[in-house]
Image (cartoon, rainbow, N blue to C red; front, side, top):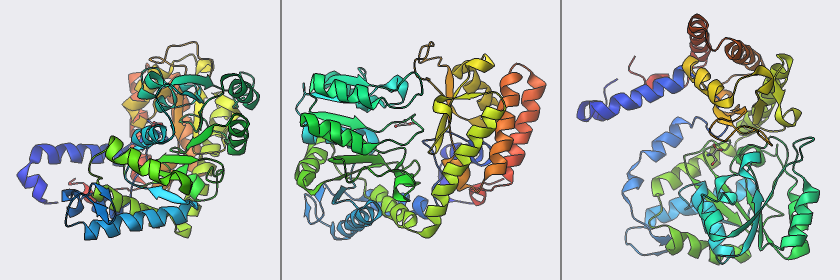
Length: 417
Ligand code: DSN
């Protein structure tokens, strides 16, 4: 394969080759990652990266925006259709920026906000003290019940009545069960709060109708576009029309400068892909695979947080296996299975160690793997956890992982060898 980049800058070309090979020959099980189509990659690598377009379609601060105006309008229209949203702003560079814009649009620094605890499945931008959200707003955190690891809606209601937040955030990055968005609306209505639903993890499943949609219940819905939605690395905001003006102002000039028009084009491509019937089958397969993986791991003696999953991810409690999340993540990395260590609810370990790992099926499902492969992977994980200090076992598992991955080619044509 001879490319302009390989000749001009072999150093960067070779690093990209290495990463492509890592993705091709390993098993990607981080639930927030996926593999985009060649069409999405092409739009990302297009001439649109050259264009400044601060402002909104037909109201820009730069000339020459007639083409990118059409790109942004197309992306917004496709997104509105996909989710049934009243309003879309597709300019946020990523999920954290989308959330920041939602805070800016609805709140004043110092306001009380409720969000899910990070160590029980929430997200940094939902009120962590090390994030802008926890620094600039008064955060009241809710969590899950210790008995079943499900969101404690009674606690949520009680906290809302006690603290009278201006905004309640729902959404999570390590919660495998269905979120009852109507209950968040009810709690918010009782105290006059806004609802922000962050569906970064679930967006693809929501679009396909396989996970509850918050669109009818939330004032603002934010998401990334690169997880289950399988688009480029980016974000977006949907909302009730009444919030459109405040959101537009918060994104630009409030927080961002020029929108990344090449990424907005790639989002438009991904939305069109998600509107196809094949995406519905994909979404169902993602959940079926996660459930099969969960059952197979339970069969091997592992504990799964909340006992299973209704979505694309599961959190494995490794305490019965006597290893920490940190040790398991590193050992899995050595054999080519990529995961991340994760706290389990009420974790006795610090977040740098963790008692669990978070597994997801969006990426493996994209490359065509199904239930049989999930059972095989559960065997790999179980074997590895038991023998993580045995170099010969690690070597043979590494070969098994590579051989399974090779049966499901991904970006093979992009590899030189
Ligand atoms: N960092 C993402 C995740 O891995 O879940 C959330 O933004």
